[in-house]
Length: 174
Image (cartoon, rainbow, N blue to C red; front, side, top):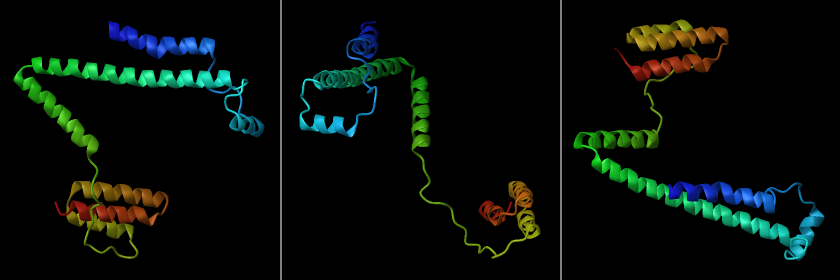
């Protein structure tokens, strides 16, 4: 309860007070080159001091919010680890398996694209592409070739036929 109240005060109360006292952290207008030149000449001039203090207050809030969120996340992780220790052995194993599978799936990226050693003809004919797929005997290769040929008839793009031949070569014979 204390953690939630503290987070609410830091993440919502402090910004509300800052908006009421100092205004929004975003400028109301884009500074002109004359404004920037005068600010670079003397950033602590009286006309710039309120804006500078407001910017520092917003920066302090961002730092406090980041630290508070980090501490809350660490505390939640400790509580979760205590909860996981209370699970029976099989459920711990299941939880570890699910987390491991999620981590591997999220981190997976193929090292390189698959290549084929079969040379592709310079000019492909839709009938020849379908014959290659039918010769492989694999239902997926035939369906892919059929869909590629249908798309090729809608707009003759040679990469469609090349993709069908490449997929047939990758799938191999049934």
